[in-house]
Image 1 (cartoon, rainbow, N blue to C red):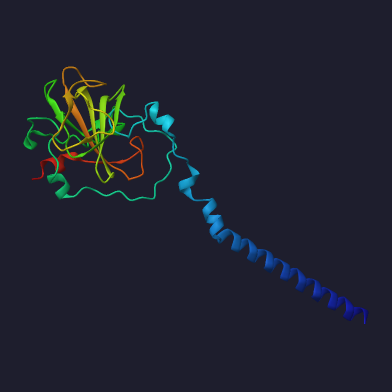
Image 2 (tube, rainbow, N blue to C red):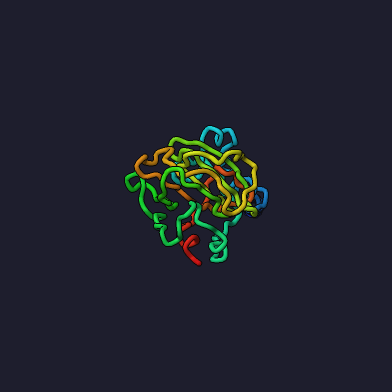
Length: 231
């Protein structure tokens, strides 16, 4: 009888131990795959966006004359690339410059090859009028060491920003929050920032962003050249 009792004790102990491991393992798997666990590890929340105070200290999109803030959160919104119709709605943003006179400098290297230009330079004499390439709202008038006097114009749908840099001066009365029409005078061509005094020009960039993103947050650069020259 003692032998039978010992065998029964071993069987019962093994059964209980196996049951405990099955229950514990199932709980761990359930917790690891639960919605609450996924919510706690979303990458978009792992890196907080820089605050507005950072922007006021001089952060700009990653284009010429800009200092992009570090640690920017991921954005789940989708940007859209302008189509040919959008290009036909744009005008060359420097007065009396024809599309045929433009040069595609979008892919040119800058800073000893460390980055791409991601904009086009429109050469013109200092003081030549800079006009709005398209309609929108003046989101920011900003001055930086590299870009000099700059303007950020946001499109009506808030998904596109037109960036104008190296201006000599702003048009009288120009202010943030002002709505502008296509072809409206914004300022004049110059060499402010790090532009050469011997080569005044307008640095013009098109940035695809999202409706909620601020003017200083990173955005996708789109080549303005084919949009301004496709007719």
